[in-house]
Image (cartoon, rainbow, N blue to C red; front, side, top):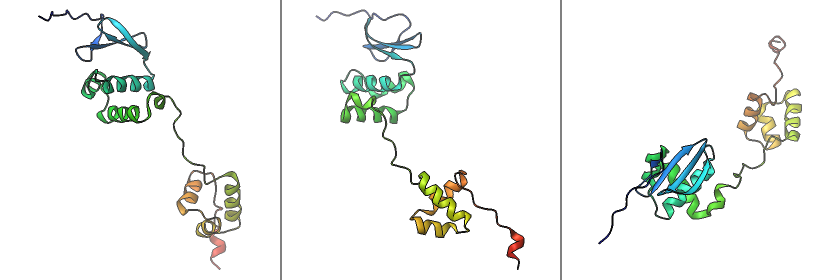
Length: 158
């Protein structure tokens, strides 16, 4: 006949499910199975949190809903982390994020654009000459990386 076990929980811990508990103490999260600590991470260490909770779900120790309910995170966040864990493993949580490609508006391109703007070229002419998208040039001007010379209205009325 199976014997009942008393629930042994560390003081101040939150029950994730019937087997795993978590406690926040002095800026760290501590995870317990019964009263035995199994993992800890800093309060602001999001990568470790995502990695460990994904590991718990993938190994069948808890469900998505347990993590969502206990920590108040979104369902999509938990699903994305779990997918990342299954496809790329633990190391994927700690590698630097992939950045975007190189900038179109390099210093050389900016110099050319500014030269053409100073010589009175239109935005369309500059984009055609340098093979740029019109939005790229517009955004550079809006961000004040480039400036268009002011048009003297009195000189146009001839």
